[in-house]
Image (spheres, rainbow, N blue to C red):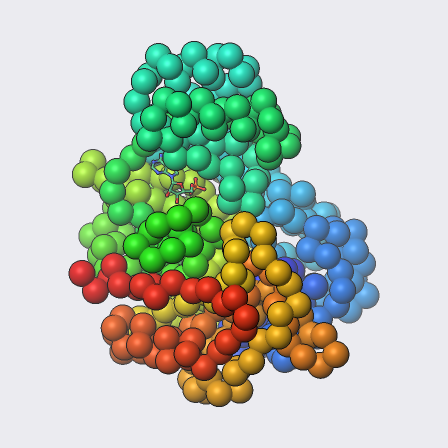
Length: 420
Ligand code: AMP
Ligand code: GLY
């Protein structure tokens, strides 16, 4: 088979790495890819959002299966366009991916079908949002409805902070049209976890639960990022909890989406708060998480391409999905300054000294005159699998120690929560 992977980050490198191990695969293309991916796939300079360009590429190269990494092309209708052209694609249609693309839609569906989530209200009117916040007079979370590259969520401990958030989103239009609608929801307390699942629109097969590290500094301090590291399996989601997530969240959501005329195929990602009242949904994503994909795919034993085909063809029920025992950890190496502004084109050294069993997934890198340089906020994801979480942490950081670039920043406590 010929496979096309869409995207250019650490998640896509992990996808390509795993897909490359499938005996079903003859050749992998990646659009646009990155220098790490280029070691395993033919990278083609077509942007992930260029649906027509991707369609032309898939036709020209006679791609058998297209796998979509990021959310943007999904919400733009990549899966719809490919299906209309008779091309197989792994990823939900625009109508189904709206579960990520519109936070209001996600909340409305959860409310209608009794899927546990924070209490909320939605607003298109600036003054109405302000009045509600003043009336409620309690800590809350203010969210821009649309896609905002992970930045449109503001946790407000005070009424003043919540009002500032509404100003930012609705008055200053900091996230453009993503802020046409605002969701104000109750602030939930608890530990966070990510449970991703494969689904073909009926069957739901959860992956190993993972935990992300969203804040930029150790001890969950500082501003939110796209994710500074992740590990799996997350011990706080034990078998009992995972069954509960499956029965009260994943399965009902897939059924609800089908009932709403938005049948969902692909990876459904539930960002959860494990509250004293049970697991509640913080957000849904329509794709693999980044960096969660790196440790989760490092632990997948089964052939990913077989699983994806069974999803596309609607026969996931008959598919076995097996996992390695042990644990995996991914430590993200970021550019100094991220998630604020940061330099690019900084030379990276030491990759050749990383032990061969440690995986280095490229997230934001480029080649400049043959030299590997930084090209994004998150630069590399150093990922190790071992017999247990402590050993995986140690091994990942042994890899990290070998790599350097000017201004390199990373968290030193990835996975530590799993040890307590
Ligand atoms: P989201 O993009 O919706 O996952 O939000 C980003 C982060 O904001 C989450 O990972 C949580 O840390 C936090 N968050 C979002 N919604 C809530 C909520 N209702 N209660 C507490 N924290 C939240
Ligand atoms: N790591 C969070 C996300 O992929 O949305």
